[in-house]
Image (cartoon, rainbow, N blue to C red; front, side, top):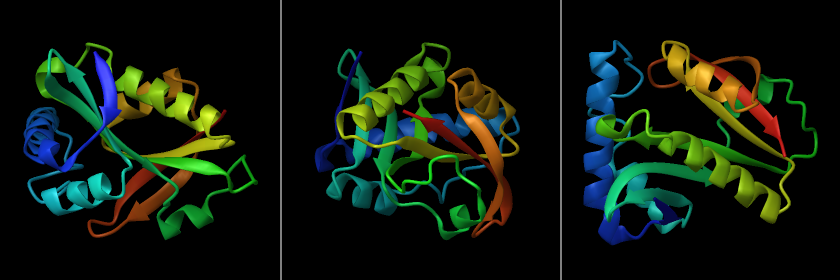
Length: 166
């Protein structure tokens, strides 16, 4: 498996990966995402910003992640451990349903840690939907600390904020 920066030509295959992931989430009662989010406009903006990465297995996109310095304004209510304001934020981590359990999500998150260290960031921040216990367990196993909850628009659902110092 390889991880690389995405290109606009990848958009269709990235959206197929999200469609598979969302289908699996809905089957498991996780209503975090649907057909309207994440959408092609959001992913295309990530690609154009050069902040979106894909995981490929045998030439097929099986996972994706966006990493940048953009945090939702609600993050300001969290008492982050890292006070330096030198952080990366993880958005839209997803893996094709048929590849769940293959360690792709973990490899993408270890890639983020590597990027954070190489680019001298102090920490990584993210949020995950309260109705997705597997994701919360996943981040805790990777050494992230849960620091509080926020309500995100437009659905105003509760999300748990996580941080890892690097």
